[in-house]
Length: 250
Ligand code: URA
Image (cartoon, rainbow, N blue to C red):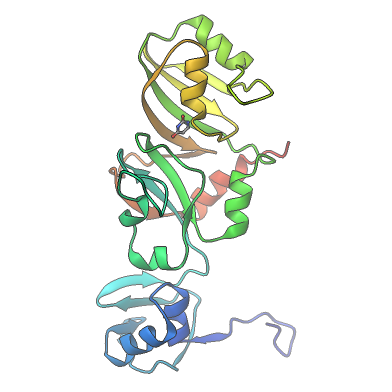
C-alpha cells in the first residue's frame, strides 16, 4: 500500500488472520487458539485475536512450535520410497503426511510428481505462478536423476538417450540433455521435461530397465546431503536463485 509520501509500507495484519493465512485452520479455530493462550508472537504471549502485527520477520509459536510468517511457502522434500505424490493415494501413504499440517492446510502442492518407488528431491509450494513456471514445458528446468539400471549401460544406449528415443504414445523423439556414466549400471540422466514415467520409458526404449531411481538435482539445486529421506526444509534465497538461474525459455 502507498503511504502519504509515496513510500511502500507493510500494513499490519490481525493475529487471527495471520494464523488463518499460515494454515492453522478456520478464522474461528485460530481465534480459539489465541484466546486459549496457545500463541506467542515475537517471544511474547498474545491472547488478543484482533492484535495487529507487521508480518515482516514475524516469528510466532503455536503450542510451543516455532513458525515464521511466510507470504508464500517454498520447500523441498527428500521423498522416501513407498510414498505417493498425491492427496488421494492408491497403495501407499501420501508425501503430504510428511509435512506439518499447516503447510497442507495452506495448499502446498508438489511440483511435478515422482513415482511411488522413486526417491529424492521434490519441490513444493503454494505459489501457483511458481508452480506453473517450474513445471511449464516453456521453461526448461533441467532435472537430474540417478538411474540404477538392470543391465550395464553401454555407450550405444548412452548415445541413443542423447540422440532421442521415441516413446509409446509420443509423436516426437525425446532426448536427454545430458547423460553421465557413474558406474557400469549407474548413470546421471538430465531431462528437460517431466513426462509420465519418462526415465523408465526412456531406459526401456534403449533396451534396459530401471532398477532404482533417485531425483538428485533440479536446476542448480542439489538434494541436500544432510536431509534424510522423509525430511523437508524451507527453500532459502540462495536455493531460489539456483532454481531461477536455470530456467531457460524455449
Ligand atoms: N521418470 C520416471 O520414470 N519416474 C519418476 O518418478 C520420475 C521420472
